[in-house]
Image 1 (cartoon, rainbow, N blue to C red):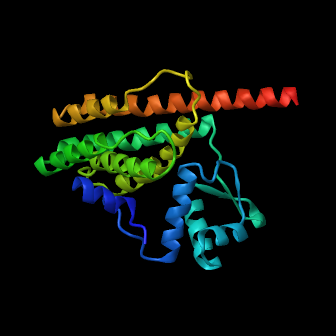
Image 2: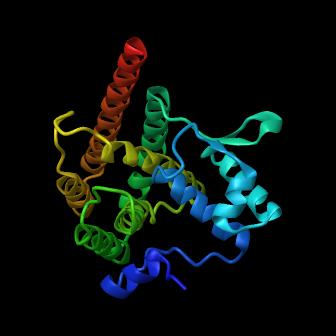
Amino acid sequence: MKRPVSSKIKEVSGFDTGRTPPATVAEAVYRKLRSDIVWGALPPGSRLRSDHLRVTYGVGVSPLREALSRLAAERFVISIGQRGFRVAPIDEATVRDVTETRIIIEREALRYSILNGGLKWETSVVGAFHALSRCPLPSAAGEGAEAWAEYHRAFHMQLLAASRSAWQQDIASQLFDQSERFRVLLLQRPVGLGATRDIATEHKEIVDAVLARDVDGAISALERHYWSTAEHVTSVLRYQNEEENDRQRSA
């Protein structure tokens, strides 16, 4: 049986991402569907046919329905009435909305974490950052990309772990997963489109400000980090739209 990526991470780095194995069939298929949506195996806007999904994921009707309902509640999929579900589309308005909402939630959670967090929290932030820095940035979907995503999630969630607000952390977690959907678009970006980024440096700027207990500096670094991603994703969406318009004009 294939071990979860989080188990391999803990074995190699000693850092626990906090992810536990699925307890039910519905939980397992939910995680697999969500991963496939995030990494583009199920592309934005694609139809999710029940018969095909049951065969592909080896699951019955009830667990599949439960998983899809949960994904719909989290806005990874959308219901199309009596015709089933589709993967939620990604457009510029969605990218901006998710980014703005994420910043609203996380800047307060980060503020409270810096004000309330002690040495143990600082150590966990440093450990999460170190683990992320040792994992290569993915250039394509696959197990390596999933491993990096687990490290990335652990890092950003650890930044907020001392906020003492379960609601802030839960909402931030949902918005993080929505933002990870954008990453597959970045992997599809043509060479030369947009400026290159040093994501490791962006993460380090956040950590340095956190350790210095510089609330305003940490929040500013976090906002720059998120808006940089949003701007790159938007450039890819515009490029794809132009490509599609060109194909339609030449058809």
